[in-house]
Amino acid sequence: MKISVDGGALNAKNNQRFGTSIFSENLIKALQLYDKKNQYKLYTFENLKPKVFWMKVRVSIEEFVNKKDVFLGLNQALPLYVSGKTFSFCHGLSYYFFPQYYPKRGVIRLNKQLKEMIKRSDKIVVSSEKVKNELVSIYRYIETKVIVIPFGIPLDMLDKPALTRTTASKKKYFLFVANNQPIKNIDFILQSFNRLKCDNKFKDYKLYLVGNWKKYENKKKGIIPYESLSRNKLKNLYQNATALLTASHYESFNFPVLEALSLGCPVNGLNSAIVPELKPYVNLADNIEKFVKNMKKIQIRPTLQSIKRLKYLFNWKNYVKNLVKLYKQ
Image: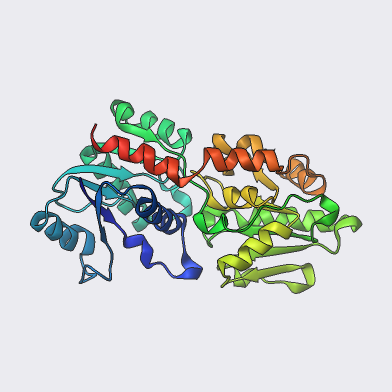
């Protein structure tokens, strides 16, 4: 079969890489590795110009001229014309449930895309049962075409062996990995860290912010941002951190949680920031008191057995296998 793939998210800069770009990179690599039977045509800003009206017009022209059997819309947006079946990928509904954390124009655009996706898609692929349940609660008639396929651990995080360490062998810092968006709830993270530092046992601890968080730098308080960071450096930070912290108001999967766990780094998270599939592996909290308590004493930490289980449940070979099955349905 001939499959076309929306690769527009691949254009993101390293310090502005969202979950959608990480997803697109990994799925495209995985399709090349694990599906040798079907033919894939990747649409990117580089091989399909001009960028102006790229999705609605330029991709539509390509679809009309060179017919395909399936279109994979990796980032919710769809062209005006698709020659074959349409498979959309919905990465979450934070803008729908928490519009106050997004620019008004962006919310209008995303909701418009959502309605179009629901109407035109033959299949809608989501990463978590949480997202499926949310979609079905809004559009009850689409339940049969919403398919859950959990993401795999990012491929570039698998070439380094996982290390499991005790608290004593970890370095004295916590890690926060996210793009600078209000939905990520950075204020909660900073408040939690400041409360922790009030305990003399933790006065020497630092908080490393990975992403575009430069304005929050405060070396006196131990808050250190990393705006541009290689993936290899990030791996090392995961492996030596006391724990990864996450407190988003909403998450549909959260790649950093999966990355951290797969590399032996414990995770402390608010319930709102952890999807059901990952909750058994995470130290959970419903409020700041419990969150800080978990920072002081981490009960759940990755083991070699749990990491092996994660690699079995969340891998791209399985993702591609389950996706390819849908082509002929």
